[in-house]
Length: 187
Image: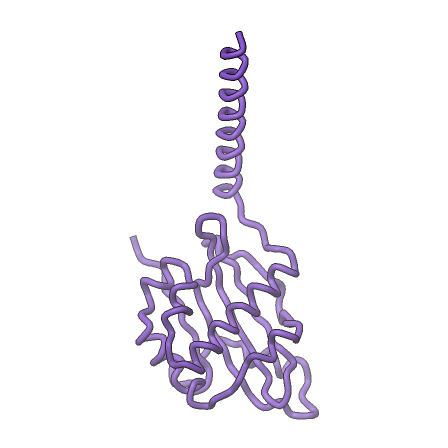
């Protein structure tokens, strides 16, 4: 009798766990929501600090390893070093972003592929930091998919709209704006 009661409790617990896992898997597959503001801030800051450390050391392995599988597939550490060469040679220390609040210049959004896109600035001086970051969900976690960072001197009379121009998509010949992103594969 005690054996049957214990068995029924174990089966009940196992069934409950299975139901919860199934619901979580279906919920994740159905829709992806924009994370709350505090989580967005943490994601932005940790990505930019990883980028900063990579620029300071010239070692882009950790930045690459923190990215999503598609980011890793599209970017070797050597490729990232080449892409970010101009910013690295400027020797700009981005570590103050840890204590500053990021300002999104457009609302955080989920794109058609279910990726989170964040475009914003840090009102740091004398160098303002502009960023475009893309994330995708991997095993329930947001992982870096794309990164674009630009630093530049802020003019005293600069309008807020001038800051948004720094986040526009870079031209191929742009020297200080860098961005990496894997284009979706054609099937």
